[in-house]
Image (cartoon, rainbow, N blue to C red; front, side, top):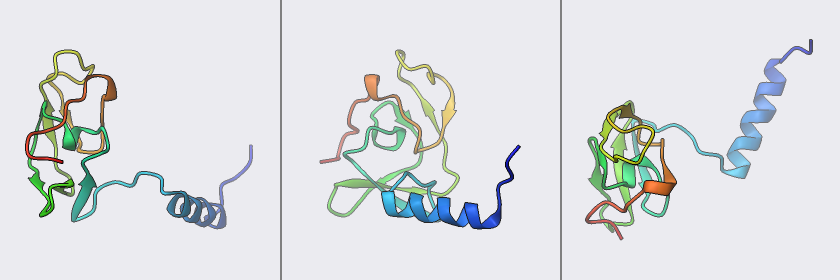
Length: 96
């Protein structure tokens, strides 16, 4: 079984940063309104604020909200802002 070294972890982290893979929210993150995730969905009932130019939402690290989309497998569950259900997503009011 191959071992995973710190050097391998560093390479993987660098690759993720270069490619732009999604990262978890930090102290306060602005998530783009074009992404079909819970934070930008009208069915997500969690703490968020529209950004100044209304092209994203500001969410706090560790924020969770309840999904109220009856078609979603997450319906009735607490989800993080980065989760999503693209098939049933609907843009939240106030976002461009």
